[in-house]
Image 1 (cartoon, one colour):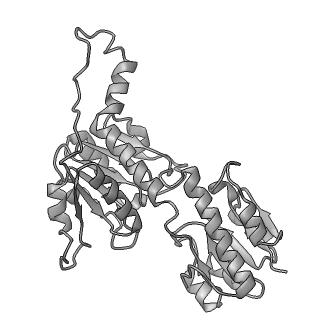
Image 2 (cartoon, helix red, strand yellow; image 1 turned 180 degrees about the horizontal axis):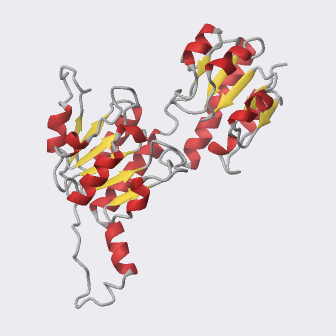
Image 3 (cartoon, rainbow, N blue to C red; image 1 turned 90 degrees about the vertical axis):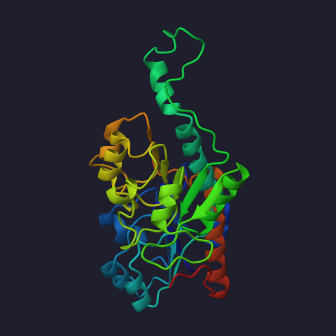
Length: 321
């Protein structure tokens, strides 16, 4: 009987999800570990035939050591950078991921950040906490810019499902949508060169994967191309943005504000300059753009479908390698 182990259940749920589809797919042979540290991997996996990991890394030595028992690796996310895919392929262990489960959640979070920043809500909240409204000589405060989104330009970096979902919400608000071409590539129809787009955009939203080519894609040089009122939103991967350059851009007025849901190290156990800045034009959220309850339930259901199909038919859905 196949056995299934989920190495880091608490990365996807906090007791608020229906896990019965996963239990049924595993035919009752399901072990749920809230967390798994590196030194616990071998014990937690044991002789499982199917392993689910959200963010726990499975490296080459571990995968090779499991070659005799492990038949399937399921990543409970879209990105698979926590799995040594070369080792899995060498050992003939299929790797799957889950897809398009959180697009709406991410897009809505993007616009939560855009709305808050475009209307200077953090800055106004800070002023209220300091008693500025209470001391005002008129009924309202007008100390920070308040901008409407209709008619403004949204540049999207990354044209996949997340970028497309964000574009649809932007269009519904009357924004002009631009999609950036990949750096150092000829500009295709329907795209704009990244540097040209940065100069035009009122809002820039990042939705591309982290690769060697996109590491620090938004560096000081590109941040300087943005308009002084423009907003930068990153719900993709932290290292796509040079955080030191971003901090300078925010404090020196190169850009108007930033909404950041991701950092290079998560959790940021060693701190991060963006967390320490406490700027009124910066919002940092703890990698929750994807995490609506509906999105997380869809993730569980998609995992269940992958596992049930594999157990009953040996077919591998959503195969990465």
